Amino acid sequence: MKWKLLLRRLSISSPEVSVRSRLPVPLRRLLLFLMLSLAAAAGVGIYEYGRGFGGPDRRALSAEVERLRSQLREAEAERSRLTATVTALEAQIKVERAAQEQLARQAGALSDESNRLREDLAFFESLLPAKANASGILIRSFRMQPDGAPQEMRYRLLVQQAGKPERDFVGVVQMQVNYVREGRNYSLQVPDPGLPESRRPLELSFRHYQRVEGALTLPEGAAARSVVVRIVAAGQTHAQQTFQL
Image (cartoon, rainbow, N blue to C red; front, side, top):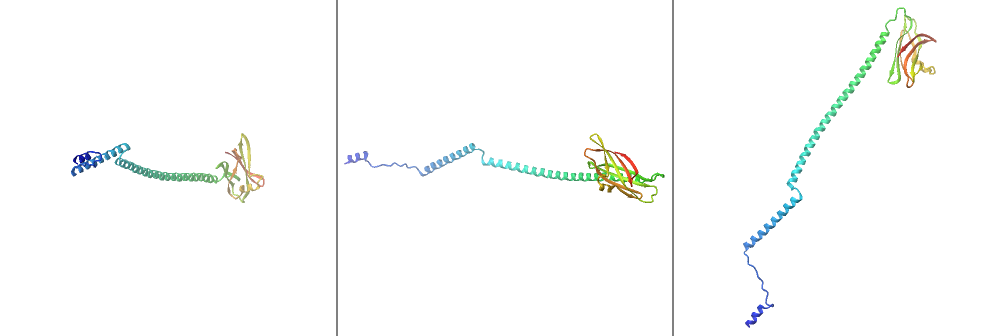
């Protein structure tokens, strides 16, 4: 019977046997701690490797962002300063431009005033008494000059009745403007005989003196050379004088 039991235990059909290790609890905890430490170390190593492989860390990126923000603030401050400077310069330019325009207007006004005073001086000089033996109608002064456009001409004439006139003189001024155009000589009659209404501005009616002013237009390309001025009344010429331009 004993041999049967022994053979049975040694045969394949013997019952399963489990072998269990009996480690102390502190040793098992120590092994678990070591495994966790190794896993953490491996994780840190993988993280560091990935960080070095992938680029700068968060701290470096934050520092770079802060540096760029600082540069942006400096650029904005510089832009504000330059904008203020440009605004101040533009305001100064506007003030200087306004001052220049005002000076130009003043210079123009002074020039006009100077011309007017010069004309008034010539006018009053022409009012000086004529020669003691002078009589009849006298052409005391005449001027003609461009008025804006080259072909526009403005004239001023002063006519006087010398002596001690007893009645008004009634007549008309006639002018012959001699000019050159394309190398040839021409003349222009003022007033135009074909335009009766052009006679009215040149009509005379005065006792002592009369001032006549007006404008005329020369043909395009014409250059005035001289003007013959006549004082006519009842078909008779009372005074005539040629003025070179």
